[in-house]
Image (cartoon, rainbow, N blue to C red; front, side, top):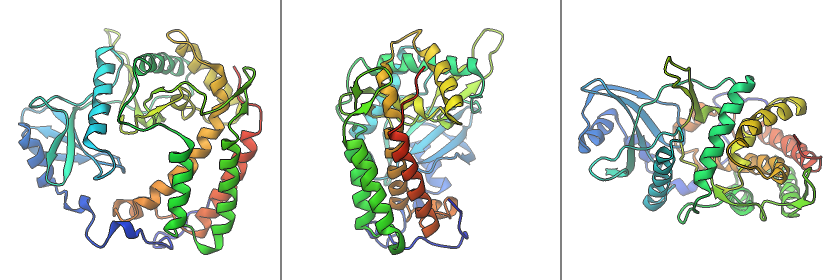
Length: 357
């Protein structure tokens, strides 16, 4: 996929956004500080925007020197009930001593309202991206993911959605076509390969290296982190008391799905490298929780769904000024040609023998 000139705009307009300024355009530093003051937290004026595109997230320093993180949720993405369910899940994880960051309870609430925004405040936690080429680090992460999934399996979500073909594949495809997000010269090619990829997934059963047939529809559904890539795991070195290691941040995409969804995004490289990484993750994972090896057959279907969903995610948010600035290559014919190539590769990958350890 070749980046295009930064001035090139995608050949579509998200008409659903209307002509009014994007809501985030009204979220000034003063508004952020006013929102914090409304829940009894008074900043000293120091704000730092953190790298989040889906929401607006700020690190704020309070008058007593303590740092907190204020998250202003993207309007109309999640309902208040869905956000509260995410927060309740985070609180369950903390209660079970799983290293996750849960929002603060302020005035008896974790979700607050300021102007057009729902927002939450969490304690600040430092850390860096974990070294995923270190097998001990992967094993450690595996142990904590197993503990997260043990909590996640205790009861289902009732408000938050599931990861399925309809919401991550068919609906994004339909939205992209309805809003003319794919250039005319690429529409037929992209739609054809997208249809074939979804048909491969919807065939329902994939050969499983653990024996038999398996599918996304028949997998055990548990509450997941949902977006467990390396950027959502922060690592702190061990101190003299043995404190440190990984902790999970950003449960904004928490949803129901198979356990493997929280593992596969931690794998990279060629097949041999991914097999080694997976082996280390499962070595740690299975110290605390059993893992259904049949789910390994879902890795490539899940990767395919993420590819389709990602394009629609970008297109839907193009009216937000932060997106054209940070994703200038999106929407061109070169971009969609690259997507066609990647989906073709995914169709082949879904027909290969799954990883096995």
